[in-house]
Length: 227
Image (cartoon, rainbow, N blue to C red):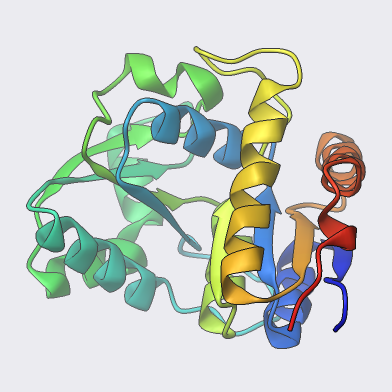
């Protein structure tokens, strides 16, 4: 018997490292992708996906078209529409659509309906649209790109977590919800966990990643036996 492993990594390159280890990869992009994602899940989203936008320069294998296609197929499976969350958070809708083009091409290829394209604004995102029973596709620079990198480099599961409060949770609860989700996936898949601070240039992501690691340890993950 052995015990699970726990790692902290940074940027899309760190997401690839976690994926290649075979870990469940947890993306932390506090401002705003993973906070937006937590709010969407809290509001009843079926699932979330993340993809890189046009112009992303991460030095790793990315495939936003594939992510868009999978998101679209998931929406068709659940007979629901797809909500796209894109950047810039401020600016014209046409600019968001243009930056999301590669992922949107994949959605179109899947045959799914794109419901709305909305800005990536964090916890208040649920005031813009009803996420209940919808699929959410985040096409964003840091969090979306890290998700894309992890998924397309073989991670058995890619999840998100945040330390920021959401419409229904405050204090420790948003963070705890995220790490419990990650621990359950890792136990089910018999893997370790890699927490990825989506940007090493964002102190909030780095500190949040460290905090989530401590919370995972406090919840006893490293003492759980694996096969």
